[in-house]
Image 1 (tube, rainbow, N blue to C red):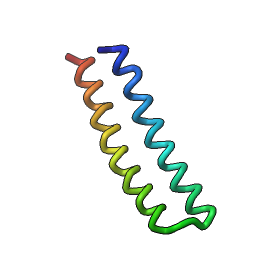
Image 2: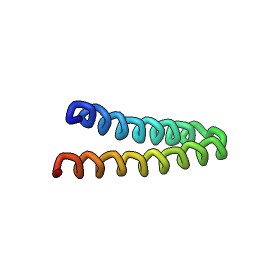
Image 3: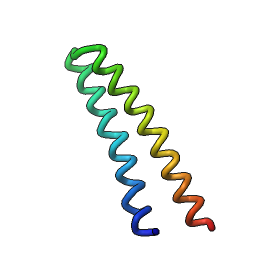
Image 4: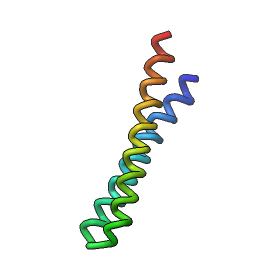
Length: 63
């Protein structure tokens, strides 16, 4: 499980950063406001999932 957790946490964090950058690039280029809104909603969902993953890994390693 440790190696799986070592892979899962960075993937979750990178996914959040990637969607955040896509949203920022879209806003800076003057893209569609609805697309930026959609990307930021996806980012919030990914942040929630990343926090759950990180807390799960902390719980798993403490047990």
